Every structure is written in C-alpha cells, then in structure tokens.
Amino acid sequence: MASRSAIEWTEITWNPVTGCTKISHGCKHCYAERMSRRLRAMGAQKYREGFKVTVHPRTLEEPSRWNRPHLVFVNSMSDLFHKSVPAEFIRAVFDVMNRLPQHTFQVLTKRPGRVVQLDKRLSWTPNIWLGTSIESARWMDRLERLGETGALVKFLSLEPLLGPLTNIPLDGIDWVIVGGESGPSARPMEADWVREIRDNCLQHKVPFFFKQWGGVFKKRTGRTLDNQVWNQMPDMERWVGRSIPEPCPTTALDPGSSPG
Image (cartoon, rainbow, N blue to C red; front, side, top):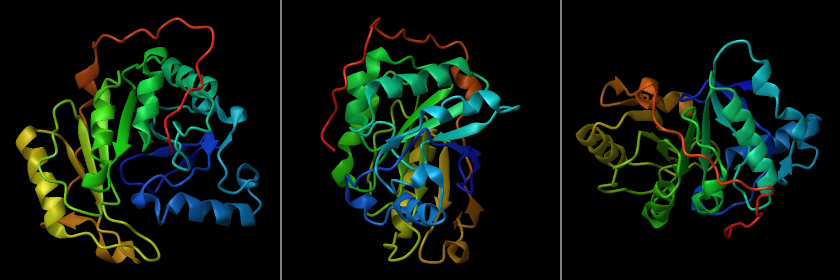
C-alpha cells in the first residue's frame, strides 16, 4: 500500500520497487536501508528480502485506486533506475504514471545515466517530474545527465548536502530542494552552503525548498533559514500545453544499464 509521507516536499509515497545499493558518499547513512531493516523485523512482506532490490508488480495499480489527486514520491525506498530493475518494469511504472494525469509523480534518482539510456523509450508526460540527487561538487555530472533527458519537469535534490555547491547552472531546472543529513552519525551542513544555493535560485527565479537542517535530532534543528520557512514549489500550470515527446516504438526494452 502507498503511505502518507512525513517528507516535507511530497504527500504520499508509492514503492513498486524496494531496496538499493550504495553508489556515492551521500548513501553512507541511507534512511531507507535503516527503515527496511525495521520493516523486515516487523514482518512486512515487501521487505522479507531486506534491502535487496526487489520489484513488486502487484503494487503497480495502487495509484489508480486513489480517490483524489496526490503529489507522489515514487520509490522513496529505492531507485527506479537501479541497474537491477528490469527495463520492462521501468516501462510498466511509466505506463501507470502516463495513464493517471490527476497525480503528479516525483521520480528521484542517483542514476540519471541510465535514464538517458532508456529516455527515448519512455513517455514523459507533464505529470512526471524527474530529479537527481547531488550531495557535493563531486557528483555534478548528474546535473548534466539530467539535462539530457526528455523530462518536461526537472528538479534537484541537494541532500544530504555535504559540501558547498557554488554557482550551480540552473538553466532548465524547475525546482531545487536542499536538506541536511539526519539520523545517527549525521554529518553537518553549513548555513552558508544553503544560503549560496538559495541566493542562486532567487537570482534565476527557480523555486527553492529548504527541507531541514538535519542532525541527530532533526525536529530540534527545524527547517527555518534566516527566519523564514522556504516552501517554494514549481508552478504546475506552467507545463500545461507543452508538447509531449513520443517514446520510440519498440517491442521490448533493452535492459542496458550504467555502472552502479
């Protein structure tokens, strides 16, 4: 079943895939891995394999049963574009999202290289937002790969922010989220790193969302930056009427993948 989410920038989560593997230093203290262990111990059927990448075909039609529109974080407990997720299953997830324009689906990946590989065979309807995570300057190449996709709405999740990101090129970016790491052994985030990103967004008129300062006790540190809570979101009406690229006709998807 889908779950109401405590994540500040979404409403509900939908996990047709669970499990992942670490690909960069932002994954070191993965919250999804910790949560999957708890769920497995509680006997949750979807997590009987722990954090092993697992697809769940029975969950595909869940969004079609929701009575009202939702902002949906897709695979909060995984990465849809992990190399172990069959390309045919990725296409099946997209087919569901394409059929349900009343919902807005937020797909976040650390593997935009694989998105590029499959891009022409996917239908990027305006209700599918594609984001990539960048935790430090070391991973700025993900921004370049994101720009190569056909997604009509593109966003950045700069969390956990582990270092300064100076003058991020924001052309073609529709939204930026920033957040510090939370939970046990959380690594610190400096306020000036956040301010520089916020100021860059304001200069380029890109909506800015500050999720949290993080830390071991994130509720104590809150999410106020310079006496303000930053909850800016993309204007969903902006994409109404945009042309939708047709996926290339194919009888089967190539299961090719990028490293990681």
